[in-house]
Image (tube, rainbow, N blue to C red; front, side, top):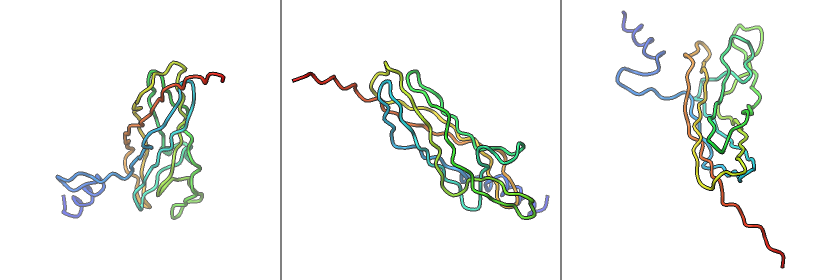
Length: 164
């Protein structure tokens, strides 16, 4: 294999031999989300996409495209609802007949959260995964995932106020 082909193959794989690849996508969950027992709240996760790359929106513009998809696992007494994705930004590849809906730069995905009535006070960590396929103007990388932990705090129940 020629040196140029080796470099190109290494670049497309995302790293030079012996180095750790720089992630194309990072997820930053909030510091903590407070959900009262029997209550609900919303977590806003910030997604960062490296310059020059984009992700397919959810829903994707075409059936064959890989949409960005967020999954959050439930805890025994706290559960996530269906993620709320932002609208995609129109993007047209050179020579394409129509726009794609994409995410690039920085964007947020909201996740509704609910706690059971008998949720015990304390901290929890819901495990999550963002699935995506990053593309630039010429190629798409293979589909990938990035994990994160979503910290959730259940506060102490307030005692009912007694009448004076």
